[in-house]
Every structure is written in structure tokens, then in C-alpha cells.
Image 1 (cartoon, rainbow, N blue to C red):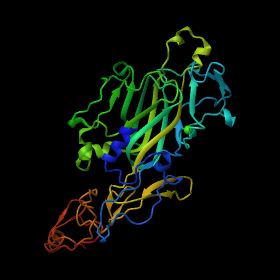
Image 2 (tube, protein in one colour; image 1 turned 180 degrees about the vertical axis):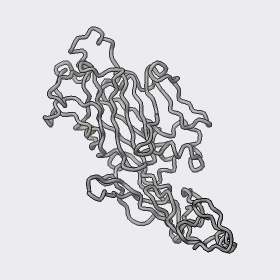
Image 3 (cartoon, rainbow, N blue to C red; image 1 turned 120 degrees about the horizontal axis):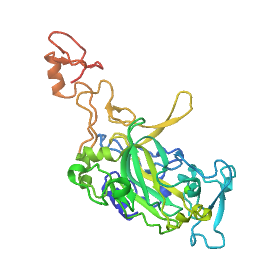
Image 4 (tube, protein in one colour; image 1 turned 90 degrees about the horizontal axis):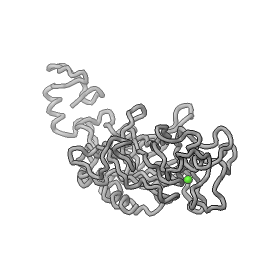
Length: 385
Ligand SMILES: [Ca+2]
């Protein structure tokens, strides 16, 4: 976590008070950020870059699991010797009995170390093992700038698993990181912790977190910018700005770690191999391109679902403040930086727009040049500077 938090502060994504625990990571229960004041303008009322608070974007989020134990009735599982002590090695998972259930909701609930709750898969006896995958998919309800993803295992960490993201609802799943004791065999990748400057969006594979030990409580933390050279020049790196952006995160559990004793087919042994995760955290900020300091819930018309949207400032609009308001296209839209808020300007603010208007050289959105003296209102929505 130290490395993660160090990077988080380096990232400029962090200007709020230091993050020391989950309570400070999270916003309100619905995932929105609560704050007062407007950080998008400075004391002299000039626009400045502003960013939403750093949150655990996964907290209380809905995770879809392709497999969960006990969905079709009680099923027995056994914990590895040494994890709980020899006197209680087997237990029951039953989704219909609350104190025996291990649903996906337990991945993102409040993480209380005195009362650990966890999601759990079926066991190897029910066929969970490579090449059968188990996917856990978290929808963030809008784009976030991701600083880290942390997974805390209740079972031993897998022999092979991967983190993926996507950046739009129907977009492709893009790999973030592979974890495997057999990188080459399972994922066709070298075991590596290094990316080149000209290949910064490449996902790496590491064997560092794939030991069967510890039998419970093992953490895996992925920091999106760790080891990526342009992290120190994030404002200028479109590649890394895209890399940290995600609307959904997926954990793909590919291969269980074992002691090799499953080969004899003993049911009690097979029941002792399964995936279990007690906490899935995603540290990051609601993505608003430097033009908003908070995100708010937005419900569909029929109220059946709600998403998040940026509360845009600097004359910007869109869910991520990714465009200028109508009539504020005096210069192209741009992300805010530390030096320049790049606020959208109303038409006529710069001399260039007046010059174009005076000479009647007006470009319509269909790229047809309309010669003088055709009049098109320079402040109409279809006027493009
Ligand atoms: Ca939990």
C-alpha cells in the first residue's frame, strides 16, 4: 500500500488530505463526493483546475460474478490445514441462508477486519479450475481516473489471474495486469515489471503475487502508473491519461493454486480448492478532465437505475466535462492542467474569432466553406472556429 499511496500522491490526482484508511477513501454511501465551496475558481475568481475527491470507487458497488457458491443449495467446502485450525476444516456455503452465504456484494461492503465478509466460488469438486474462468465485473457507473486496484483474498491467491478494464459500456476489455506463476504458459507473456516509454499502455505479467502462501489474507495491489515512465509527466501524456481511465473493472480468475494433491481426486481435497475474496477496492477519482470538483447521481427517467455525472464548471458539458457548452467554442476544448484551466470561452472572446467573422470565412460542421457574404450567426451552435 505504501507504494500505491506514494504513487497516488505523485499523480497529482491527489490533493486532498492523505488517504489512510477506507473511511477516508469513500464518499457518501451512494458513491458521490460531498464537499463545500467551489474549487474550480481561485480566490480571485479566476478559473483553476479542479478534481473530485479521491474515493474507493468500488465501495458498495455492484459486482457481477459468473460463479458463486451455494446458489443451488448447500455445498461443502474445506479450508486448507493451518488456515483455521485442524478442529474446523469444513463448512457449508448456502446462498439461501444469510450466515452461510458468500455473495458478490461481500466484495465491496465495508471492510471490517473484526468481521470479515467474503465472496466465494464453487470448489474444484464442482469443476472450478483452468480452463474454466470465474469473472468478477464491477461497473463504476461512469469513467474514473484509476490510481490503484486492490484485491484481498480470503482463499490463497490464485496461481493465475488478471485485471481488465473498459472505457465505455460496449467497449472491448483491455488488460491492465496479469498475475501468474506461469506467465509464459498461461498468458503468453514474459515475467516482467518494465514497460518502454513508447509502449506505456502495455499490460505486464508478474509472478510476484502467485504463491499459495499466505493461505488467507493475501493482498494484491495494482498501481496504474507504477513503473510507467511518463507518470512523472502525466499532464502531457495522453497515453497514460487514457490508460488510467476506466468505466468498468474485471477480475478474471484463471487458475487455482494447489499443493498438487488434487491429482488423486479425493473429494475432501477437491473441496479445499476455491476462490474467495474479502475486499475489492478501486482507488481513484471521478473523471472530469479538471473541470469539476464533484460527481453527482443522475437517475434514469423511470428511476430504474442511476449513473454518476460530473457537475461541470469552466463552461464545459458532458458526463466527463469532455466538451464545451454550446456557444462556448471560441477555442477548442482541452483538459485543465496545473498551469491553465483551459476553460471554454464564449464566442468573441479571442481576436481570432472576430477576425474570422469579419471576413465571413465561416466553416459549417459539414466542412463546406461558405463564401462571403453568406451570413451565419457566429454564435450559432453549428459555427465552428
Ligand atoms: Ca467484504
